[in-house]
Amino acid sequence: MSTKRDYYEVLGIERSAGDDDIRKAYRKLARQYHPDVNKAADAEARFKEVNEAYEVLSDREKRAGYDRYGHAGTQGGAGGFGAGGFGDFSTIFDEFFGGFGTRSSTRSRMAPRRGADLRVDVTLTFEEAVRGLAKELQITRQEPCARCQGSGAEPGTSPLRCPQCNGAGEVQRRQQSVFGTIVTSATCPRCNGAGEIVTTPCTECRGAKAVRTTRTLQVDIPAGVDDNTQIRLSNEGEPGFRGGPPGNLFVVLHVQPHALFERREQDIYLNLPINFVQASLGAEMEVPTLDGSVRLTIPAGTQHGHTFRMRGKGVPYIRQNNRGDQYVTVQVVMPQKLTERQRQLLRELGESLGTPDVNKPSKGLFDKLVDAITEAFKPTG
View 1: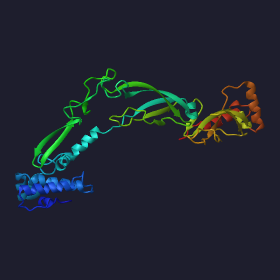
View 2: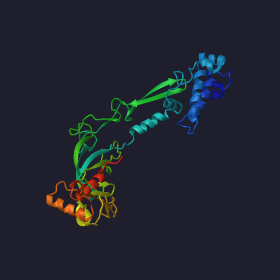
View 3: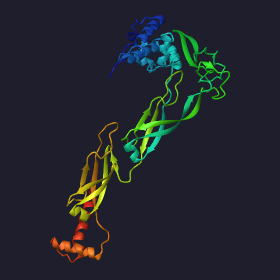
């Protein structure tokens, strides 16, 4: 467990030091270890230690208790940033460095600011997402008023410099302390930080400098985009402030599902139903793809669940020449109704295959095929 250092040692002073010596030592060390100036890893801890020591030694009652009983004599009163010290680093920084923080705040307040970003959601069909397209968007946003050219003043007049803040956008209050002058600042209540006042507001924007306008934009959606893909249109957001750049427009795409295809990244998956005769004897099937129907050879004896790979029949990679693949999974579908003639043919087939009890429908080839399909679809686990 760490032990607190002696407060006189922290400030580098003798125990007989007077109030002026304590104050001078504190100001020197606080300036040295302030985190806004000193970027060392232990600077903040040292700064707090210095502040704690000063809070005790600058108070006569706390100092007397400390001189008599050590750290126990402070009764925990010096552990934080209390009324005798400083509760805000920025206040100390302003005091020690002549209001540097305040001037920095003023520059930041009056600096150009980037406009806000906008978002629009667009719904695409499955085919549109795969092939890409140019799509028109209706966007409503703030734009500089055309009548007053964004000044907020009626044409023929000009905004006036705010007399309360003299165009600074903020007002300052000065207060004397034992360390010198403390300067605090706040947004000017008269001009709301603008630094100027419009005496004759524009009749179009009523002094707001911007009007809400609906624009038609075109976005080029590349082939191969997926659900939740975002497209950024630079500088198509809200306008900036004080000459700052406009924000961006983000187009978020939502892709509708397809009735037949399932997409997994750039690959396409399709379930192809066939009957048990096609699976047993083989067949030539017309298979739908993104490019139209393609003939697929089903070899004789194909089993339920077998998957065929069709290379290059998937979704294009965005802004690339290659594409994903299409996977076709065979699903053997059993007929739900058979005529008596069809049953008889199946029994004869079963007999020719050596199936016992062919005269019992429940034990015929058809029933065995049904059992096999049922077993194949039986849930696992």
